[in-house]
Length: 170
Ligand SMILES: [Zn+2]
Image 1 (cartoon, rainbow, N blue to C red):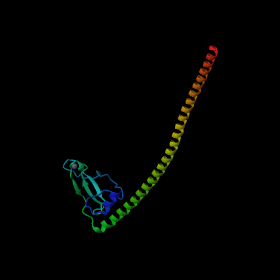
Image 2 (image 1 turned 120 degrees about the horizontal axis):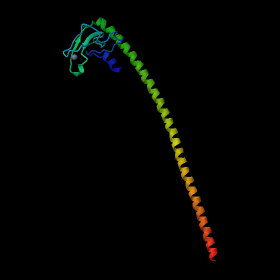
Image 3 (image 1 turned 180 degrees about the vertical axis):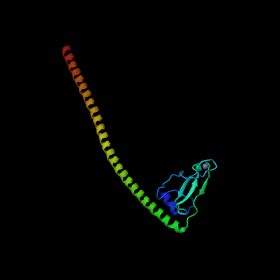
Image 4 (image 1 turned 90 degrees about the vertical axis):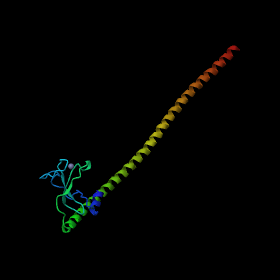
């Protein structure tokens, strides 16, 4: 979005096929076919750059793979047609950019709300975790208390038996 907007406001002679109106035919729906050296039918695009708005050109789809076919199909447009067309493109792209910024802002707000919700969840989880820890410590404590009472019973029994033994001996 941003790059295509800046492309229209730049003075680059490289074509940009970012159309303010969607093309009604596909890039290969034309004839006679323009063939590249590699024997492939070149795609016909429409430039929407600031220097050549609405000017058609041919470019091989294998351009990245070594094919360098690039050829303008239409002659250069006059400044009479170029300037208003570029204003239309800029206006359209500005509106799209504003829409994009609005979308980003909405997304950012949504994420902010999600983060806040996650923070609350984490705080709640921490509370639960500490509750669980307290439960575990409580269970350990009651087990220790049970063991202590068993030991106490054992001790009392032992003391009683000792007392009985001492009594019997005497
Ligand atoms: Zn090619």
